[in-house]
Length: 356
Image (cartoon, rainbow, N blue to C red; front, side, top):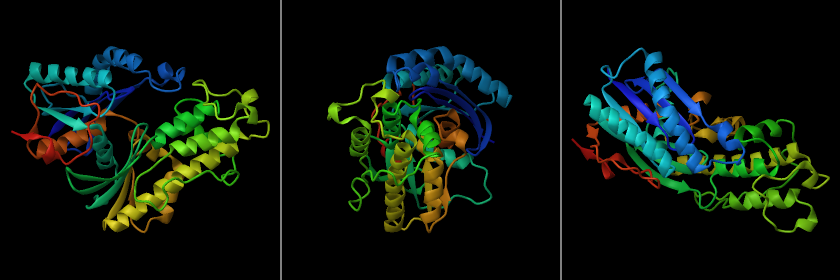
């Protein structure tokens, strides 16, 4: 039995978890900062890092208590090294270093995107995941299609050239004066809307596996702004109902926007899976919780589709512990000189880790 303590502080959730053998969840505690950032319509980096400082110790203690273990029972500490907000990452990495040094534990730096992939290993299923797989990683800051040949072997075959899908959800929600985070708010509003009302663009359709959502966001803005406002960008606080065009139905806009995002994500992922002879399609990240995305991917994919439980779609320490277990199992370690990498791309483990 191998117990990994996972620590995640890449953005606005302080997550700590204990995972056994990379698949059995013993605890998973997340302190969310949604209320703190809602007034900004997005994450305020300095506020996020200060909140992590306040939360990291009690969240860790709670995770250990729920798992009924102490640091003497832990075999290694896994921590998100990047990508993410530099200040937030520093809180988690420095805290993990202190625990590793103080208790003589191995330290394993994990890529945040890799963590999202390994949230799938924490899903309760009777069928083992199959390689090779194509994984759609969609979150607030990332929209990528990754070919995964085996544990730790990644090739990014497509990514966004501007806004990520999650960013587009947040910005459109703010534009429509909906709540933050935008993903759940758009989905809720879309439940009452007609997705055929607006013919919003599907950018880069038929042009490889990259995504672009900036133009879609602009199309929504032009659809809801009164004519006299021209091309002026929306204010950060969004538009009040009085500022929208009088004929705009927010539910219809939300539904039309949501289906435009989902269409492109589904189409490109399925194409990539066919091209690379994948055995399965995986989805991970915050946007993978979107019910329409799940339904459409399952309906149109000729391959099995896997995604994590809803609770593990958001950033959490459990996914970092699971990813850390597989790195640890392969003999990889980091020393106490481990630095944060805010712009760290997802590459194969052998390309950036030292074995020891």
